[in-house]
Image (tube, rainbow, N blue to C red; front, side, top):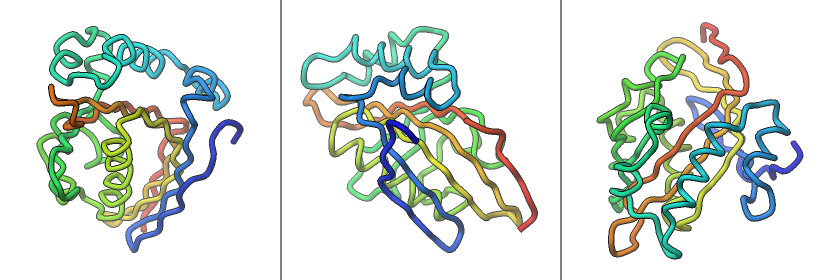
Length: 188
């Protein structure tokens, strides 16, 4: 797809994923989303808000969370990435999701507790990229997961924003996802 570069194809015994990334320095989020048939509002608003709280080195996570405009609050998920091992990363809050077990049921759980191990590994690699680079990441994801006797196929975008403590160390990632097609479910 135009503007996105295929970056990673990941395969596990419980699913596969192809992740493409848009360079936010050369492609605006609005342009990227519009090229992929979607509404840019939530992604654009969240990125603009993050940029408005950027101090030149980092975005302080407490200020970001406390001052997040009300219309965006229910659209944002948070994961605590202040752990050396990604399987310890903790989902503080997760958005609802039409796939059973992949929505707000994940709130308060660690990556190691995800219902599908391939999904946990795929997420861990992206969360590490965002944390370690300390830059927003905008990805297009094609994914098929197998779990609970079902196969889940979905295509979505994810915008991840690094949030730091007062020392400038990324400790939390705020993110939002937007489905580009209705998830498909079949019996495995």
